[in-house]
Image (cartoon, rainbow, N blue to C red; front, side, top):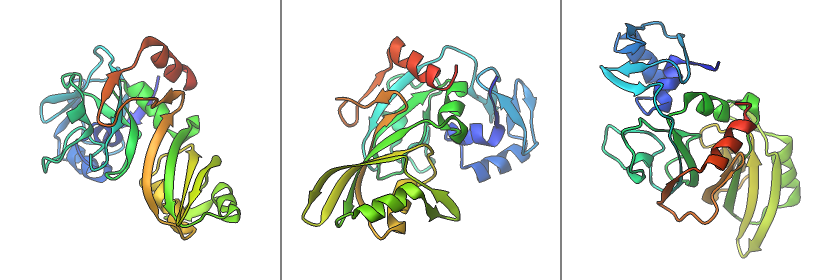
Length: 241
């Protein structure tokens, strides 16, 4: 049975950042299974536990729903935004299921985002120990030399931690740009962009094309669809559920 820190669960649901979520918990605004929790490191069982924030349920053990979205750029990968900016949930009809994004993309990145209320699956798809492949199509400025590509595979420092690519495939080289496919097995904030910055290249376009066994395919930008039974089974199988 998967467990996750309560502040992480709140952050995944779009309530607030992890740091802010910890402060919210300590203020007594969060209840788990009807009991107010104020302990910062409290862990919850996903998806069995029912979590309320300011009296509203954000996670519950109800029917599980699974969507795939082709996220446009300039859209937030959160369930809500206090400033009223467009989020990934604006592209999904079923907003009553308390959906939240799996493996967020930054504001300027487009491509595949999974939306679900299945906490166990979310935990396993996003935790580095399960080693789930994320594939990105990347366009960078300048010509990427093979020695720099090897540096990405060997590992570069990103904010004090080593980040490395599992696989790099060159797709196209043009006048002043390179397009390639990059595979990672973790999803730290702005990781792809910062990896290329570390070797002296700026990312001009970034799109996630697959997440584990799930591929974006021909789903149009700004469109979402429910996953079919086979896709759900493959996602669960890849993380041992």
